Image (cartoon, rainbow, N blue to C red; front, side, top):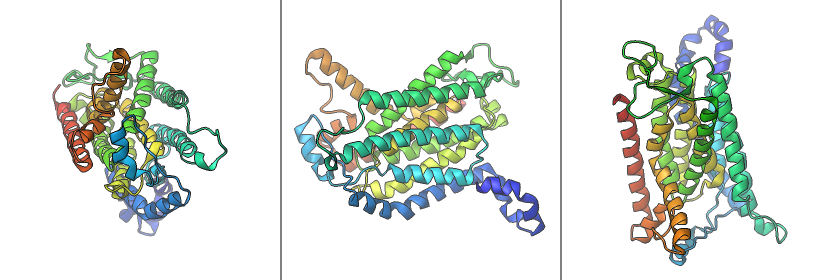
Length: 387
């Protein structure tokens, strides 16, 4: 909105001598880092008010696990309000509206993904956490298949429009593989070995990745500070990738696909990073609020959407290594349990609970997973030059 107003009133601002002071907002990198600060401050500003409202609504989390020892450990969290994702998503929405170019198609689609999954997660949280106030027999949240249906739905919609937006530009449909060059050295021609996805393959990958990452982040949201801290690290890494993909010279130098217009997604990743850091202020141990599905589902889906938009699905698997490690532990645990008739690989899944039950304190688990998130992000960024 501010960016739009600046572009529309540049002549008038120049006449009164203010244009030279405000022209820094034309610089996308400046707006991206302002978005980090703004989003962070919005969460801090409204955090305590939102938490008090959630407590008043008696929206508290009551975690239940198939493990008596873990239920005993986690019992102290029962009164902590959840659904704090409204803080994160609200802050991101306001920041993006203020500083992003709202005519940019990548930004418009990012807002749709954010809103769609935030509403889905919020509806699920509200049903689960207010069931005690409603009539006996009322539904306690959405069924897993219902949530998955909506996640797959927005994934397919986003994938379709990303593919349509890139028709006529092969780089928008390239599958970027590890250590593979996109361009021939010194030219703008694609390498002969590059895989250009068909429409069906593109939409299928986008659908699976958006739904899968949305659920992976949701599984990670199980300890004080774990999800927002890890998301902040991943957001900053994605901001770097958005800068590369949106800059023609940088993308060609690093032999990455150039996606014109995608640089504006730096505002989105900056807003996500700032909101997660602000939420961490209230979510660090002992947590005053949890993000719930309202925050976890949209943030995971948005990360995947951005990775698909800038053609970096494979690097997302590295940057989000902690999230996919958590999801893999659940898949392995459930599959092995059913296959063996009751045996387990881990003490409990997701895997952060395995380490917690193994003797690590909760702050130790969270801090070490943050360290892993930083290492994964560094590996992804270092690999940019190795091609």
